[in-house]
Length: 515
Image (cartoon, rainbow, N blue to C red):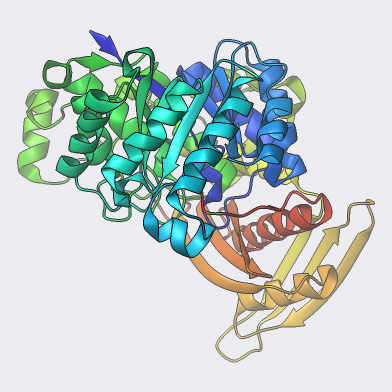
């Protein structure tokens, strides 16, 4: 069977989701998991955009040897030079050069004529090719461009050494039939196409990203660009897990496959969701909470008799936790470590000790601790360890005949303990006001949601919030059996992301629209 290369852009295009800011350590952690998942290419970032992106790509290039590491660059000398510097230590580095091709972009954004863009493409692909022989070229907004002009740009790129031709549906405008037709035209008309791989890059503005990507593969594309959980600009990108499982489940139809280890899908999805703060919706295909749940009596009856009656995939095939082992307050460190390993968490001794302490505290509050509780526990522990300002204590008084009042105690980056209090319209508002009195970073709370991690009155509650500051959004998550504490932790998580983004200067210096 033909093999489709999986180009993962979670750490570049996916990170462009509003509020989805990752630090260098988090990017590296996800990159190593993507390597375990078996992706062929990791687009690690946009090196010219920030020191953080450059450093993340550079470290990936040095540390991850069996996966191609790709750096994005506009068709500009400084971008290409910076990208080349970032991947210098890679075993197999790639430079991804892009330039707009649609008249809409050329007229309103670039303010250049078609011939100028052709010559810029020629010069910049040649420049990139002087650094390495693994060059990808993208005519941005290809699906709203004159197809013959796209062919002209691709011919120039191939002549100058491009080896991968990526066809971006940048604004999610295409339909599957249109996209497949464009891919076929490229395969038939581009000179030297036999030396190149044609790639799909589809966005989900009309909910067609995965359908368009699969249509492109059917038409002959042999690389697919996608992200974990489908995160990305606006409505997101094509979801890796959906494409991979469609190809795997319907091999009889598509006649192609990938080298992805599907048993790593669930673990990777959870890691990306935890580190980015982007919650996976319950009805999300493949990795959503309800993906393998059955409530209808007819469905339950069928599943009990034979799972294939209503399930086209085995949950175990994507690494969905199958054990129903439940831990409790009498469970020991070894049992916890073993269960975490089965769930895909390999903790250091220090991390295990801290997690075990939190586990014991949780087990005192809950009779049974489930797999989903453990996942929430590990995620919360990671968030706390990454923070510079730490929540040490929160206390609230409220009621229908009293003014909600909160007292909080924080530990600042120098280890000093600071206590303050405030009132609010409710207990959470009071907590946030008290925290703001100490930290003093102005922001606007734009989203607040609460969900139960498991069932039952003693369930862990998980709070997700979004705060806005100077035109940027920051997502925070927190979990606890006490929803007020979870709310405080989520707010601290978002504030720490905001503060880190300001102080370490990892904010985007170039926040342009990219393919």
